[in-house]
Image (tube, rainbow, N blue to C red):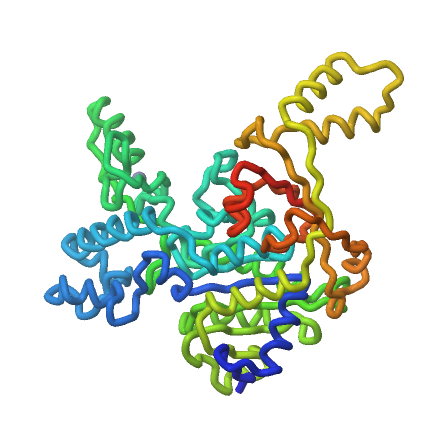
Length: 444
Ligand SMILES: [Zn+2]
């Protein structure tokens, strides 16, 4: 049986594990329904869950609530099909109203730090996208706003999503409209492509064709997964990355959150990732109740019993404890610098070197969506706890300098070199009380 730790016990083993995870290089996260319950999405199996609600409302038609998500039952009669469409539309509205929770924000932080290899989710609520992660969706049209290649995707939904509808006859796909209205598409509507084909035939005096009904692009029980090969390819890629030689000194972590690992596909996913590299990959399952028995020996290293949000908070606190703000620099007002740069670009000053021009341009680019009148504050954040860091990370360490104004502000640590992120201080907790108008650039 994997080693079991309780989050409420402040054991030395737990704090050592938290330190190790906070210093890890690369993360894969696997999530289940448990992370969305606090976000306004009902789960399926609990006493207040969707299965129970369906059972109470339609007990005369289905023997259990699960039947309404079983492809072999739903499409047996038009009555069960229409109840399915009704519930999916209801669920779509709940997903639209839901907001990402602490665990989604934690995963986003991993991505911001450049440490997220992938987040796999069993959930269909789309909260990863709302949290700002790029989500792979095989139904998104190439070139469209929502399209993300699997290589670039930070999040992979394992059981489909509620973003699109697909025709059961011709497989055309359409956006799942959030609100009714002209041109809005909802579950159970007739497929516009099928109707158009049929109308074209009728115009030439030929017999009409049947049209398919639209259903959400979620994977139901008792039906083959239409994109299982694509997902298998992504998992194999990630397992190879975890096992790559380059990272053998650094710790990789597979975090499994809020799932009971009952679905066979998810079980296989965790086993494949966990065993990818036995030396430097640790697998941790965090759940409210024990899930892993003896069969998980050699796969899951630690089973942490407790609230997933509390676990995430502990890791974030550890990140903050490892981090000190070392330098704050106020720049000129953006309006001035931008105008100067624009003028320089059109009319470069004589004898200005390419390097100087480039430096001025970098300084002057106003980030989209921010107030051009406000003052920029550039912050260097440097990790000072070197206990668990490898060589490449320790190169970034500089001598800390104290700053008189902002020293007491608690700001989440970010170390990603890829990101020059601009954010309002209001996003960064207590800091907004001190300087509500100041925008912040975090450069590490
Ligand atoms: Zn169709």
